[in-house]
Length: 329
Image (cartoon, rainbow, N blue to C red; front, side, top):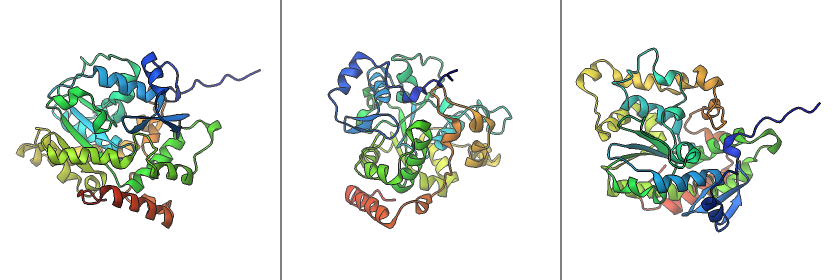
C-alpha cells in the first residue's frame, strides 16, 4: 500500500503564475535558489517565481494611504520581533499590552502584520483591504526601487530595519534550511555564503537593499525611520519611544507613569513570543512552521559559524560598498 505524499507547501509552489509573470521570468537573469529551484533578477534584486508574482501584483494594484505604516526589512533581520512591537505600539489603545487576550498571544506576528508581496498580493492580485483599520500596518521586503508608486507618492511612513550582515547571513542560512523539504537535503554553509557574498540571496544584494533606504532616509527623515537590529536590542526603550514619536503616536505622561513602554517590550520579548503555544505549534497558511521564525535572536551569533576567511570577505564587501556613506555595523 502506497503512502500518500503530503501536499507541497505553498511557499515552494512555482506554478499558478500569471501569463505576465511567466513571460517576464523567461527574460530575466536566473541563478539557482536557496530553497526554490531558482532566483530571478528583477529591478536589480533576486526573487523566486511565486514571490515575483506577488511583487508585480503589489506594484500594479496597491494603493497606499497617507496614514499607512510600512515595516520594511532585509530578510532575517528581526522582522518578526519588530512586527510584534509595531503592532502592539500602534494598537495599544485598542489592545492594551497587559490584557490577557491580546492578539499577539494567539497569533503569530506575521498574521497580524501581513507581507504585501508575500501574503496579500501573492494570494490575490487585488485583495480586499477594507477590513484593515487605520493606520493600516503592512510589511515588505521590497527594495526601495521596487516599492509601488503609490508608496512614493503618498505621505505614508516607512520603518526600515536591517542587521549586521554576518548575523543576517547565519539566520538566513538556518531559516532556509528549515524550509527545504527533507528530500532536498540541506544547503552547506560554504555554498550559500558564496552566493550571499555575490549578492544572490532573497531580495539581495543585501548592500544595495540597505543603501537604497539609508540614502532615502537621509533625504527624507520624516518619511523613513532607519533602524538597525543591534540598536534596537541595545536600547529598546529609547527606540520604541522614538518610533512612537516618528509614527505620530507618542507616549503620554500617563502612559509613562503606567510603564506602557516596558509592558510593550515585555509582551514582545523573544522569550515570551517564542514560548507561546501558537509559535511553538502553529503554521502559517503558506505552510511555514511558526517556530521557524524563532531561532536565537542574539547579536554576534555569527562567531559560532563563520571562519576567519569568511569574516574577512564579508567585512571587505561591506567596507567597499558602504565606504563614506555613514552606514556601519
